[in-house]
Each structure stands twice: as C-alpha cells, then as structure tokens.
Image (tube, rainbow, N blue to C red; front, side, top):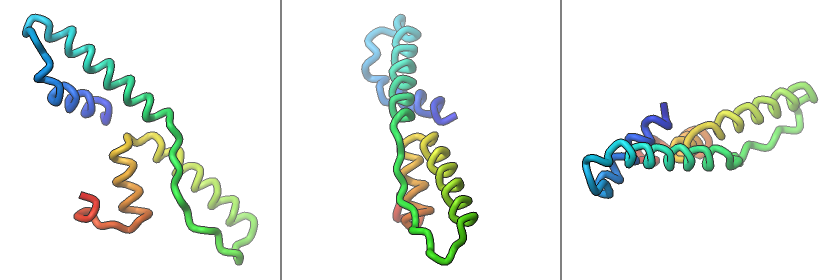
Length: 102
C-alpha cells in the first residue's frame, strides 16, 4: 500500500514532464518503474535504532527476550518507507509529539 501511494505521488509530482498525451501509458509505467526501483533501494538499506541499555539486574532469559524483541522491531522498522520510519522512531523512541514531528 505504501508503494502504491508513493507511485501516485510520483506521478502527480512529475505530471509536468509529460510531453504528449498519447504517450501517457509509457510515461506512467516509466515513473512507476523508477518509483519501485527507488523503493527497493531504500528497503535494502539497513536501519539502526538506538535502544536503551539493558539494566544489570535482569537475568539471562530477560536479556535474551529483550534482544529478540529488539531484533524483531528493527526488522519491522526496516520494512517501512523512510519517511514513515523516521516519524515512527521520532514518536516512539524520541518521545516527540505528532505536532513536533509534523
């Protein structure tokens, strides 16, 4: 769904580059293909998210569970588009309000 939205935005942003109405479908697919390529390039990059240090009073099982949850969270965050990832990290990890993020 994010990719569909990104394609629509790219088409609207690049509408001024359409030279001839007869070439719309070719132009549309070129814009869509470039947007998909850009999406997968961004998706292939790794994401680093700072996490809190693990308190010393936790036992080995708690530490292992926290590490697994952190790895799962990082994997899920890496699947988000860049702008959505930044907003999510700013809200949940940096403690910013929606107004501050906007």
